[in-house]
Image (cartoon, rainbow, N blue to C red; front, side, top):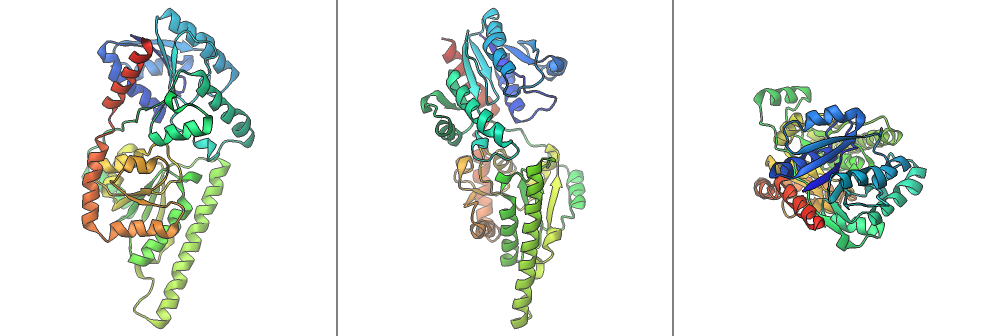
Length: 407
């Protein structure tokens, strides 16, 4: 079978979407199926290098500079790509990135929508684009394509609710995730020195987007530290862009640190007046114990996950939750939100908290801190849970869908 795969999004970086495409092709092409892989003309040689070890790929360029929602891309969806499918005798076209607009079709089309986060959190998207371009475009894309695939049951339900798409047209095919790098003592020591990790530490992954809920996490960590006298740090990984909304988030995070540090200090003084032996103790020095690491490589992240006392992932919205699985895979306990896809991915292998409730979040961290047996039990359950999400399984499910639509 010949399958047309749209790879216009590739711009030199293998992010989440690009990883899914490479894994689909790597799993299916060696079985004798041929992919007609479409990429930007300017990236064609890079894409060929990316897939140099994979058989049964025919590379074709598209005369585009961006994969963004546009009339030009919609024209290619309806004409150029359809003509390619017809000339290559391909019964299926897969559009793997959130939107496509095949008004005219010469093959069955699959649209993968990973999530519809901007319907809930606009973040960096401008108001006009959000209301008058993104929302109506996604709704239109869902109507035009034959099948919608997504990565979790939560996203399936959310897409249906936000776009008005019939649930029967939306299939769940979960992502896999990468294998962890082997732990090396040398890198462990480098990271311990870089971040001055003399004590146990708590890790958060994902940066300071609004939905990542970092200000509440800071308040909860301060409360957790105060209640348990935990002396370690909170490491928050993720690269922050220069977008204005992230500047606002930096201000909110700084304010949360200042307020929490002040509360701990004042609490220590008040307690100390009546009981000199019971002060803020190790919970003090909060400013120095909350560390924004910026970008860390995958190898560094794997080491930090393995080193951490636990991962705390209190996001307000996720369509999947790869960091949860990455922590599970290295045996690190997890505290995560009881909303959106996170509770689905965690499913009995993590401590679930209400991400809008600082006290509840602190209680979840305290639960792991004070119960080593629970940590061990969750680590084992997490490892079992992680094994359910593999690229091999994703490949088999997509091949079955391609064959179904090709009939």
